[in-house]
Length: 360
Image (spheres, one colour):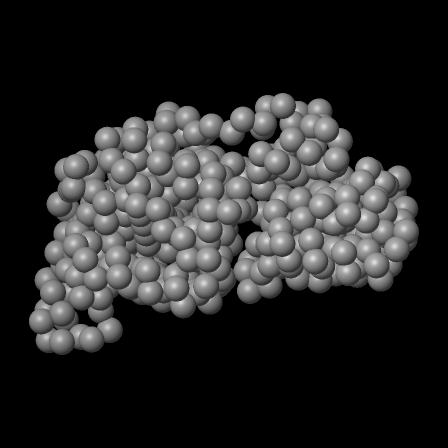
């Protein structure tokens, strides 16, 4: 994994005028805007925000942000909002009320609808922003100066990949249940669409039931127990939209005395899931490389803030893009067992090396 640094902020006269005339919509400390002046590295403030650290994937995201920050002699401020959209917006507002001239934020919006107010606040304050995973289709970084990039993954591709792996594991025939994520997210919608594509490709596999478990291990445990009781031995496989839910499903299977009898797949390649794939308890997962995500968002912003990367020079396809992801099976799980961030990935010349294609 790798990290890259760059962002720059400057006081916009028009924004300053708006502030002086009492534009109440703007954050109190928002007096900077993207411009020609660069920040010294020591002036840059790095903020990473995810739902929680109990989710291993999101914990790895924050760990990657720490690696990047350390590589440029800084410290990342770690924010978590517990999946509460109101709390997330309050945290962002508080951050934007301070000195935003050299502020860089790498943010996981709780849902698609949460992205617009975050982008608006960052724009008004002149803070450099990279978002990941969730945004409405019509909201585009290219229409903004300080919203530098939006990074996501082809959820249809990953959802179908694990669906196909699940089909292979159960011999192409049998019933499965699906655990969906937070429904107001592009990731959940696209991954389930990928499962539907897999089901169309593998007509012998039947979706017995599906229910949202909100990317939560605890909720997945409860939901899986309910669905196992409802469908009994007809359940031959469990498709989960992330690894946290897959791990909850594994626990439910253990409690039901069905460990090893039902194939389970997930997405995120968190350490416990990769270990489960190595042991054969899980069939497959997909890695988006959380440590890379945590570093790369800060790296892009840092590089712009310090003048090593100019917004105008960021290719249109790199303002909103799909990043590479990797299918993890028993054959290659050892390669993903110890995820580590590589600071070279975050060097300013490398920040867009994992672009798999533009988000259209």
